[in-house]
Image 1 (cartoon, helix red, strand yellow):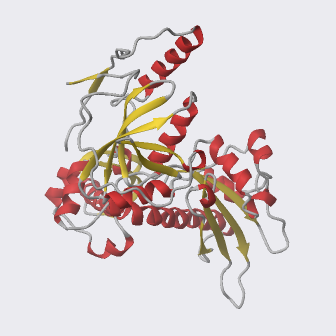
Image 2 (spheres, rainbow, N blue to C red):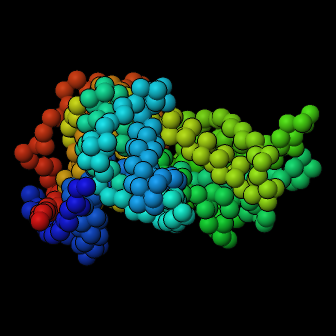
Image 3 (cartoon, helix red, strand yellow):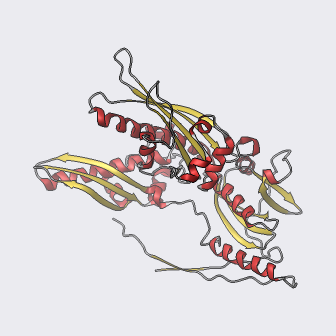
Length: 439
């Protein structure tokens, strides 16, 4: 197995030369000090969103069980089975559902050369047997090469996080609940293992959450309340997951039905992610004790919801898996740093954008480099879906939230993007720099 490498990163932040000399009032100095601190957080090295997320290549809680002539032989067999199963889970995580039937099956030697690390939990050794739970981490580049050789499109870009609003109705005669107890649906979400391309967050349920949204507004898909909840957690949107327990009829087992509504911050009207709806059902196991049948069904329902959200994201993200193209753009700030944070949040939510680098910043504007995949017109459409207007102003691409700009008549033509960073920068910019030492 490959050994993990250690990286030591040393940062140097400097204030770039001011090209136009001018006097600054005390307030301006304080603003620039704040900008310098922000630049330190969003420098090309510290803040770049490199979309190879090694956490996606870790598969957790893989159960293994084997029997053989000895415990040693059973353990060896179980570990092989566990790594094989972990790779299957990972490949399905990165690829579209329609390609799962043709996923490659590497040889055992190839498989073991793909593993970066393996840990064992809950290990038990009955006579001539072995039972455990594995966590397997794979080497991203090797997994990517395997899929490329098989000509299977994939994406390892995470979507922006979504906040789950878990509404529960325990029966036809019971009132739905959100923050009230008992809510086994909310507990199941809070205890879930967080894996997948779309991070799903469970709200704390504290006084601020209670004041932001209640069960009535959640079921009504109140855009103002949902946007407030998403913004509180820094998320791209919300997922209202309204689950209800339906009793079985005519001998059929009881089941959990979940109606899911996903919406972006601000809603489609202001350029955010469109509202989408789907439903999943999960029958309660009849061969399981009643006290564990419902928790098990809720866990499986959560997995189904997460898989559907991942699949929706991958359909878009896989379309931008071609060669990387680079462009430079200006972000007007109008003296407000939160304008930059909002543009950066929306850029991160776009499946077309692979990386964003902050080149320089003043109190009035930021200059950034955007690395993206896919055709230019699809980049413009992807940004529009996230509520970003991309326009050509005097030879510079300009990015701003559509809610703060004039309506776009059409997507801008990007036939000639900037393929490399400009040799000069706009005046009065605060420029970051950094050095990486690898050993």
